[in-house]
Length: 235
Image 1 (cartoon, helix red, strand yellow):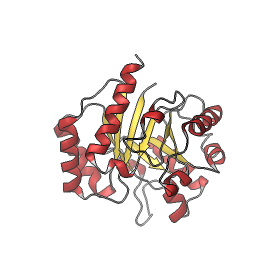
Image 2 (cartoon, one colour):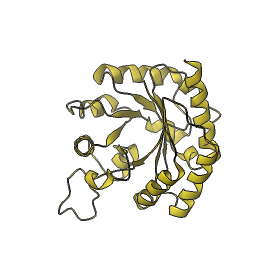
Image 3 (tube, rainbow, N blue to C red):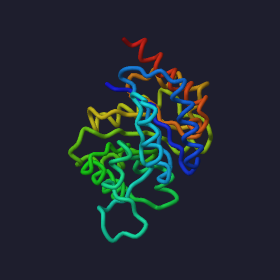
């Protein structure tokens, strides 16, 4: 199974800062077969960064949108449809706990966004959290696609700035696999270079979903390099 390191920049970095980050990353990172690195910048950065990625010739590297509309193109003021994103990103994050909490998104909203993403040829990174993870996954269980990633991120781990125990993460990943067999599951929640190694070794996980640590190129590189070493050790 392919492995992933996903970085979510949230509402940070303008285009020039983002390009500088990417240039430094490209100069130091050595791609590894079977490992996909994904960065989710702001919507404003996506077109420029998409061109920059092509100029740098980065292998095994993709961009993601942080959100999309649950509707297709049309009369939806302020919305960005999945079809508008597909030329500048290969992935899209849907259902992040911050979207559910601050923007009051429901599981049906998330399912609609995931369906729009799949129809447009994007791979949705579907975020689920506790204590509603199983219900949130059930909401997307009827989407007929194996091109989806489940990102498990317990809110408590983020709020407490302490990751959930590897045993608990593995248990939840197994529960997710029973509902959505065959889909890759990644974990996110207060991951840093000093604590990520225990999570890279969890066999039920296909990777990690990094928030704050992805903003610093050195921290993110360290996490990517740790994943690359883990992947080499499995061969």
